[in-house]
Structures are given as C-alpha cells and as structure tokens.
View 1 (cartoon, one colour):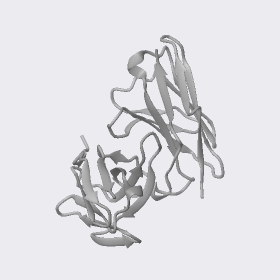
View 2: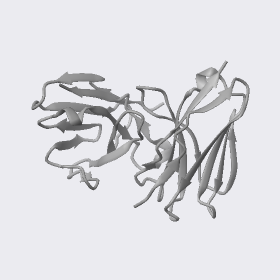
View 3: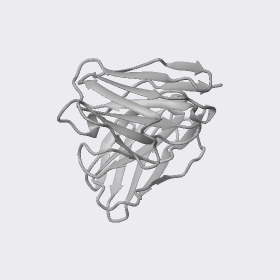
Length: 111
Length: 117
C-alpha cells in the first residue's frame, strides 16, 4: 500500500520565522510531488509541485526533494498569520495518475 | 484560472435518504474527475475516479452501490450517497484536471459538508 506520511503537528512558529514541514513516501516509483494548503472547511489549493531532486523556490516557499531518501519538505520563510493552515503533501506515480495524500501538518503562525 | 464548481456546499439530511453532489468543470473539459472524502482532522481519502462515458473506478473498501458516480459529460460528474447514515457524515471534495494535463493542473471543488442526522 502506497503511503505518504506527515507529522500532524501542530507546528507552532512565531511570525517572521521559518516553518519547516516534512513528508516521507513509501512508493519508490513516485515521480511527482505536491504541496497543498488547506484552510479549515475549505478545499486544498496547490502551493508547489516538484519533480526533480533538489530545491525549488517560489516566493516565500521552497520545496526540497530527495528521491533516494524518499523525502519531500516544504519551507515557508517569513511566516505570516495567514499561513496558518494544514499543509498536505501528495505524491503520484506518473503525470496524470491519482494522488496519494499525507495526513497533513497543521501550522500555527503566532503574531 | 480553471475553476471547478461543487454543489451543494452543505447538506443536512435524515438517515436513509439519498444525497446528490455535483462537480462541474467550468472552463475546461475533464475526462477524469476524482472524488475524495475527508473526516475531521484527517487527510483526503480518494474514493473513486470518475471516467466520462464509462464506469467509475472505486478504491478498495468503497462501496460502489452506496456511492454512485455518474460522469455523463466532459464537464459534469455527480456523486450520489444512497441511503445515507450518520457514519457517512463527512466533507466530500471533487477534483478535475483539463484533458491531457497532469496533476499540476488539478483543481479542487469547494467541497460539500454532509451531515446525516
């Protein structure tokens, strides 16, 4: 069974600090990885996608992928109270395949 | 950007009734749509993959006779929860992506909160 694991949190960070979220996956054939942000009672919205080993930066967000260790991470720099949400990690086997989601990490950014 | 509309956003029903949830892609065609269920403080669990013009593919443990999926057009998929019971109370979310694209173009509906009394 394919699994995507995340620490459920909550991860509490002060405003302006860096939030670091981790995700591991069990299926070695996974090729594409996604980070979603989900506010309570709302649907997920895509923050980042990453397909190759290394770092990928987009604004205050940096995704890191290490396929050898089956590990994906997300860094949120200069965290803002509006970043308080649950962050979901997801993986798929190949482009267009169904996604497997992790349990999500709840992030609380305190002013 | 592409939008997926899901309706209704909230429904309260009595035990034993059936509830239909609609998922529409507003500005693109989608041969494939996905239906998820999310219990409080848990992740999205894929229930089924809805395929236009053919039968849906259900995940292990999901009763296809209870959760009826119809994908009659390239822009509409429906999920019907038949004979709903309190344990079916959950947040149901659909997603869709334009034909020929990957999950980087996957868009989610706004979700339906189902409460069965």
